[in-house]
Length: 161
Image 1 (cartoon, helix red, strand yellow):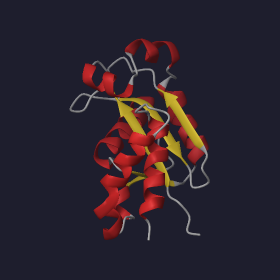
Image 2 (cartoon, helix red, strand yellow):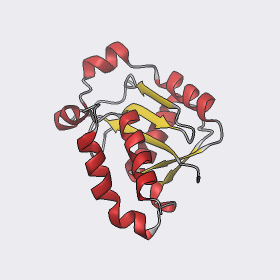
Image 3 (cartoon, rainbow, N blue to C red):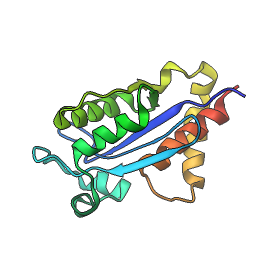
Image 4 (cartoon, rainbow, N blue to C red):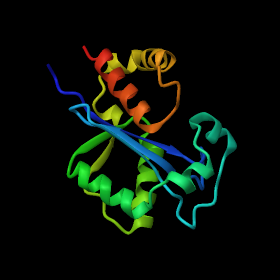
């Protein structure tokens, strides 16, 4: 059996410019999962109520349960080492990871790459249909980072020929 890719997903304070990471989650090739809320850096001000409605993470939750950005950056490095993880939203996810590590003054040891780099044409042609079905069937019923990472990995598995 072919190995599955490690997947990372990030939830953010909004959808556009000025948004920042508020939760990071991943699933490894072996199926190990990690998810962590991120306490906003003092310079991070943008907040989008529509994004909050989508992922169900409030500012209050981040202040109460979020981890310090330096802790999150160091913990991701500790857990991931020199792995390559893949993102289906690489354009924004890579920007948010870069912002997290920049503000934490930590250099990332792992690499985040675009999922499209490892998808075949056949996978791409059925990707959204399969992923949307998995989201609809998810017992978690939430749009959160580790749940999304697992759905992305399962979509990869189900679309692989």
